[in-house]
Length: 523
Image (tube, rainbow, N blue to C red; front, side, top):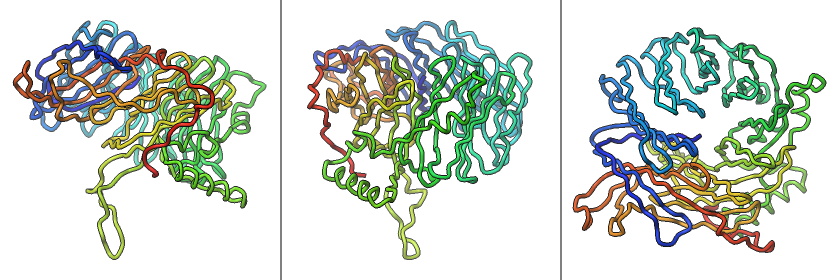
């Protein structure tokens, strides 16, 4: 589940119902929080599928010595409030990480400059709050936080070396997972497998030919399996695990050809469990499959046609000469989406953007003060079956989207054999409908409405979008709304809009209409 966090301020709530007269993307409900930009607050929006949505509003504890107050509010799918709870945190604790599963939301706090931690658990059904205190590590740079059962897993770095600790809510004890505290190794991701009661730590090394490893621990924190992928030729950059049944999981991610953060393509392999006759490590390594970007049918459709043809011709010529053409793309890989056939992979392509170059010593130097954020160029989607076969791929061009933080912007709604792809930008929602490698409806823009037709949005910030449940999305952010006949005072609000896109009404195109019109950046 996606979580979005915002810092702003709160005055009151209002709920507006709105249904457009004619649009594919229907805006049915809107929750507004008029705000004062002079008073800082943090908003945390957590969609709960068809059980509703949780909004957490935090006041205090940002830049002063006031205690932090957390106001938890759960709403149903009609944005009607179900319950409200308030938690006042001790002034000595600072918020570190948040994690949620189907039953709880967990907040991890740390006492400033000590090894004392607090775990706060909020029950999503009734809002009951429990807290647990314990000792972890001093000088611990926490980066990952997950919970499985009564164990919290906290990952990060201690004196530059990776560490993952398991903290028990039952007796308050903590264990360090073995085999992690080594030099020149980074934690790629921390994933819990509740089906098998295992936790997987995915790590990669900048030395030893960029080795990528999966280290699997049981519920007693014992190392039960290690799979090492040697990066002599292709070095794995990231990995996501998806259990497909009780005997097998799929590992999917992106890889590099030269031990850099720049991707050459995506890979997939099967990992088998519980069969003593199968060497899981050897099987996963021998059966790994690499898909270079040039092998994907639609990956470069974000480019203009002449640019796309030129690049592919250059890559083909290199291969005919027996040389590798190295692509240089940075990818943000989403969590894998299970399907009836296997899985769907979504990844966004981005690059850091600067305002310009500063001349220094006869050369060009990009200064940190000139950094603007992350520019997104496109997203691509791939469908795989349970055996790791690539079934199809598609592309969503992204135009003029710049984010100060690297976050998942593109959201996916699976509706039968059709997929709605959507992302927010400057108060608008951009959508595209695909069916496998076909594009049924190219990019459309929908302006977010406030409700009354005469109202006008003059400013929009921190716009974001979340796939919610069924065919519904949640759009969130901040807006300034100009005075109108019904409301003569300008207002600033944090908004939460319920949106619906029905892909069933989108007609299927004939087989010949599979080529997308290319648009967007050539980068």
